Image (cartoon, rainbow, N blue to C red; front, side, top):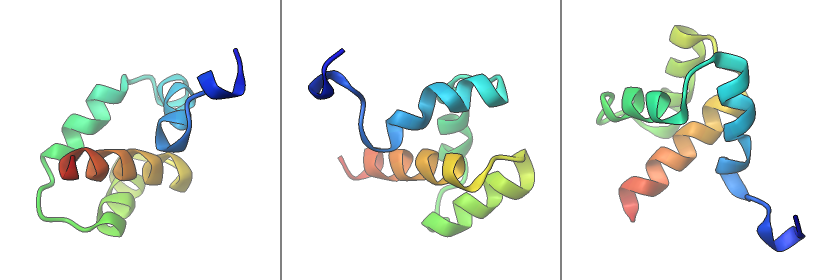
Length: 71
């Protein structure tokens, strides 16, 4: 795999998130979709407190989720 083929940004965390927490990324994005109206750090803190995610993993999921809403 060349450097240009590597996944960058928040999605680069997805394989380790799925491996560590045993749920597909779609599961986490669906949970986030159900939390409309919350700000970035509110969502990060919610994932950490309610689902035990680490900060980096929670932040990556929220960043990806919010970027998708803007597109």
